[in-house]
Length: 150
Image (cartoon, rainbow, N blue to C red; front, side):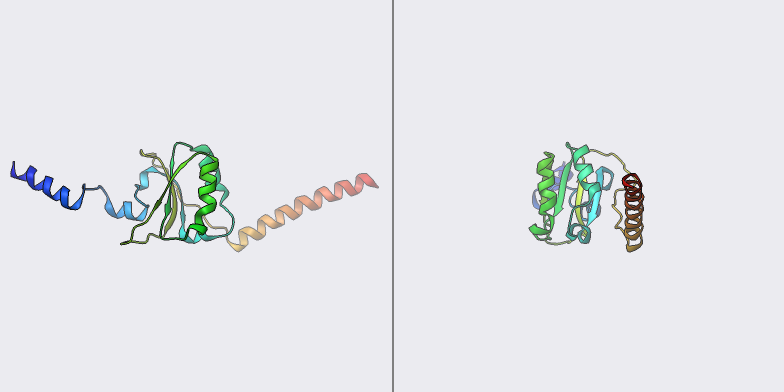
């Protein structure tokens, strides 16, 4: 019985024991196994919004969006607006003891065990390849229209 009383006192002083506290600190209060998609702080700070996050918000409206409260509101406000558009609940998580490198997490309240949760940044080479593809398609279309008009 003394163990139960000690546990009760410890819980009263320190709060409820959590599973995987390091993982929860890293992923803004949730567990890795629940995450659909995650962005680093530097990705959240980029101008524009990642299409993958918007698609995930649209497809997973019962999920919850967690945003790193150690960042400024202006840096993630575009994601809050998108969450509102798709009626996804969100929470701004501020941990004064630990600033996670994660800036945004979309997760369920149950395990989904998605293997690849991180969105990869586009490198300069990938951006150039996409630009070439766009130019190539545009050039082909413009040549087709030129031929028809002649």
